[in-house]
Image 1 (tube, helix red, strand yellow):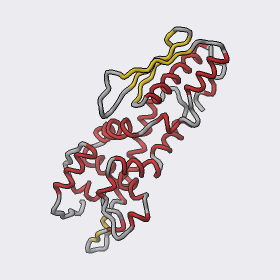
Image 2 (cartoon, rainbow, N blue to C red):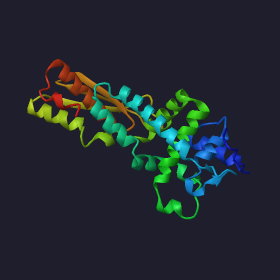
Image 3 (cartoon, helix red, strand yellow):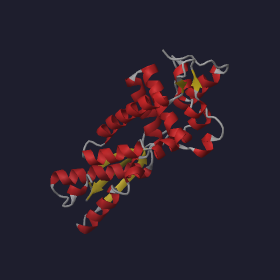
Image 4 (cartoon, rainbow, N blue to C red):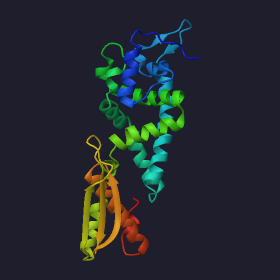
Length: 248
């Protein structure tokens, strides 16, 4: 049974959760606990510390599972090595720290002294703890949808994370030039476009024939996904001599 944290500003917590995650909690105490860094630990009479470390442990496992499912579906043609590398980058401490700051979670973390100015990892730790709180309060399916739709799709650019090793557009251009094939990219705003969250659709044609499509929240992301789609199509038809390197 969780120790109940008494706080006179519960409304502020409800407001923060709504602004950051769009969530109305069933058990606000879980989320309050998720924001208490160990430097500001409270203690029960028996000496048991009250902080977010246990929720962080749980959230770490839940987040890794959600990201694994997401990448498995998002990249059906990629191998285990590619998926593992990309997952590691998404759930890395540096990535989670940046994400926590972008969504404004850093402003609500409770620390003691000047710890927050010395240890930036507490932002990512708190984000994992919040995932743990969401899981306990709302269940896996709800947490899975929220993380994918509210965080991954909005704030994580998969193309940027994979660009160094997987610049699919450059590979496709190089192939077309080497084989003297006419290549074109047609990128437009998709019907899913909104002012806050732009959405692009790209079609790739080779010698005037549609070869691949892709969608993303940036023009670059959309074009890279379309290029990957085209490369996979070329590999399947036996036209792309270097297609064995697509999955690296």
